[in-house]
Structure formats: C-alpha cells, structure tokens
Length: 158
Image (cartoon, rainbow, N blue to C red; front, side, top):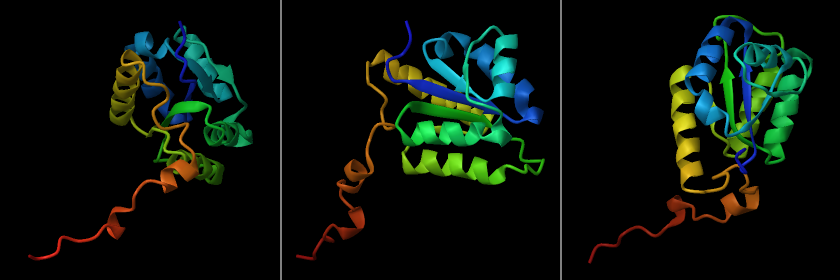
C-alpha cells in the first residue's frame, strides 16, 4: 500500500546516478511505500533497479522546476537530490529554485547519501506512527503564527 503522505522526489545529476541507485536499492522496502517522481534520466536509472517513478521532464529542460512547483503545492513529502557539486550545471538557477522551495515549505531535502539515509528513517518513523506528511502541508500562515522566541520576555531579576 502506498503512503498517504504523497510523493517523494528523486533526482540525481549524471555523476551521482550510481550513488542514487545504491541508495534506492538499500532502501527499496521503505521507498516502495511511496509514490516517486523523478526527472527523466533519474527515472530511467530507477527503472534499471526495478523501481518506478512518474517522470516530470529532463532536469535542465524544466524537470527540476516542475518538482519545485510540486513542492510549493504541498504534494511532495521529501526531496532526494543527489547533486554533483564538482561540475558546473547550466540549470543551476533551477536547482536553486528547488532548494529554495524546500526551505520555504519546510520539506525535507537530502543532498547527499548520509542525509538521504536520515530522511528515509524519519519518513518511515512518521509512517509507522501514522503521522501524515509532517511539515510539507503547513502553510506559510501556520508557520508565521508560531511564536517568535526572540520576542518572548526575558527573565527579570527578582
């Protein structure tokens, strides 16, 4: 049965596809509980390791932006983006837009294998506890209604 908390996005730059494939294979059981969306090249790699994903276009041709839009719409529970930081990417502004949307909407974003492992563990903990998408559905208004701890009164001397 698929997770009710929505989609997870998986993206990998060409130089990181092997690491992404290893990650997906290592967590196949956990990841199979979620629907996945991926850019075209990453979706092909996922199919090669017997995982399926809905495609949203080639990353540099708008795929990263499509995933950013899904994050902004509250449809994505987590993003796993294996970035090859050793190579300059002509679509870097699209990558930045995706990262920014994850930050604005408080969606877990893993940019390397260690963080990806931690995010999967958190997602599975939330699933076992039947907690729906923990933060991705919170609106900006809900986040802004939380107390600003810098404005709380300081302890006064007696």
